[in-house]
Image 1: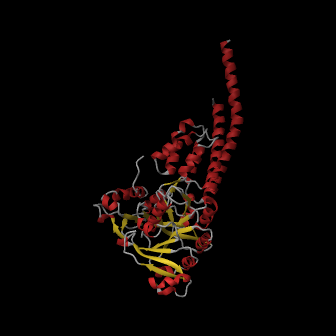
Image 2: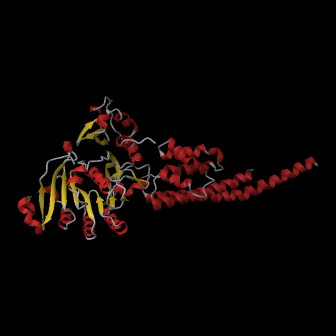
Length: 335
Length: 151
């Protein structure tokens, strides 16, 4: 069987008349495409290094305007003509398709008991192409995890490569340690019919589709992992389970949305995780043209360790907390 | 021959109801996508009288749109079925509805089709009893008639 590239996999979900245009993009550009977007009443577009472009900027194509039949065709492809199989995902406005590509859906919400029960009238779809980049976590492995696993939090804005790096950390650490991946959105391992589509390391176990709090608890109970990896943490329940996992002696490697340490301060549940000692290091990632680069490495130390203060630059904002952030001086390098 | 066709229609309708129950089960407890439902039906026991089920995967490979593939599979086996046109229409409608709503919606819709097929089954059983007997007696009479002519 021919193995399709991530781009080729992703365009398989695009409506046929749009696909005919996208395939005409030069191969070098195809490799750079992060997202493909279609919106009703507008031309299809692609996203490269955080910027959005019309397809016509890269290929000689007639301008087409997306209509509702294109959206319906694409939606049927992504949910495999099976609305009933993706209820939970639709309520969260995304579906992860084969290959780990996440399709975001903008639509009208149907609310029941103050919660989004489902969606209707889809107006746009965004296919985010998942790529496995072996070696993308080399720098982090070398500088932060060389002595073994530890509590590590990757933070960065959307499309900065957090999941790609997490996936590579799984591949590298999962070849040495017992590692459990709580893959709620199916983007890390991209399990399809029980088999991970990505290389996630031979000692890794995947809890696919599990909500993170349940997945963490189950993994600890049944797999006795040395490391737990999960993507995009942030809500109260997830953070509570992560805190209890620290008492089980498990190292947590996770990612969270935040453009900077200042933004991280605004996320109180994540701050409570840090305060509980779940993470000993925070890595802030860059995006845009510097996608995947380490912006800064922050060491988390409790106030008991402050006798090291003179060697480092303390950030001034955490004086009133039980811990301190120390920026580890380093050269800006690709993660 | 005609009596046999009536019996076969009953068996096919019974299998259709069993298929609806299998679909409801797989949707309620496993939320299987439609393509996987087709595979589950193929490996289910007791659905052999429905020839189109064995053709589903072949048609899915040719046609990505599930309801079209389902309908094509049923039409491709039209010569091998003893179902009436109305029964066939119900089966095609089942394929048109699969995957179009959430789990509760699917279960309600399938329950509706189950009721429709149950009514068809009742009338098929009645027809088998009434006409079957008549066809058998007619066959016996014709046999006796031929025997008399030959003697």
